[in-house]
Length: 233
Length: 245
Image (tube, rainbow over the protein chains, first blue to last red):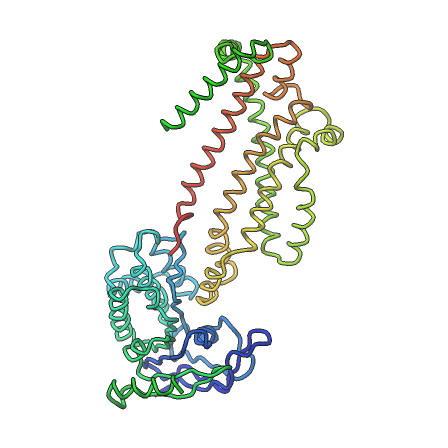
């Protein structure tokens, strides 16, 4: 299977403080990769490196678009929609930035908004959305550009259990509809098992990947036990 | 609304009682001021002078708004140069507009130009400082979204930086408008031949104290109306100000 992201011996420091060191992994096309680790370990930093928001201190990070016009698009912990734009204009902002031809905008928006059940809410202002609806719009905003890789930074963390379940369902529906590859970071083992085909455990200070667990290779209980052992180590 | 009406009635009552107790021509009672107001409206002096003051505010404020927003935006987005520029202007800002009146008369002579200059100075600094601060402190969470979505610098400026700064720009324009109005009265007290400030001086010479108070009330009402209009415009143009998801 083709790789969409390859990271080799990557390190990153905030000033004098090393955060990541010797990180190696690859993300395969069409798969969901979860980076699991405790809070503050550097998961979001790793995701921001993949999104191009930060530059690695050393090492190699390569994003391969695999036929997509854009490499990565990111969903943040909170929706981060622009409150001065309507729902539709938040989505067209992403399309305009990605230089998607204007004649494709309506169809792309309608297809994805229909999938998350928000087709009727396109002309609402952001203030009129619940937090769950706003996060689903943020998910659609990232996918309308048809990226090669969808980056998710603990996107369920600001939601209550009911909305979390709904967003997880919407995510899996959108992922199977678009075929996008996914990289998600989380500190929640259950969330990792729910979403991930492979789970990378990030640990240490500075942090690196200490283990890769392929969920499909074993029963979920075994995978959970394995993860817990690694995290307690 | 009812609360405001009751408060005004109570204030008028207090004023009436104080004027009765003072029993002096230099402390006119509300009833005498109503008569003076009727006279000023009938002979057209109140409207003519109010128009002259408003026209000066409109000119000076428009120039201040234009330069305040443009230079403020420029200083806000050009990091080091902008900070240096702001430092210099922060030194000039505490000088009250009335302190500029003598030098304005020397530079521009008696007349509208010196009044425009004083109004400009009164309004410019709050607008400039507020706009500069707004552009320099665009929330990182919005800029990060623009970068993550690979928006061009122009798209980021138009769709992110300007709307993110808009509430602060509006606040600067609102504060500037209030100060423009107080500045024009200060300028008119010494530098021009009409307007509400000049009218107060003229009435002082003829000992028309009721007329002076009427002009002062007119100044207060017009200033209040401007602020109310500015608040309404802010709510209309920036409805997202209180919302963020």
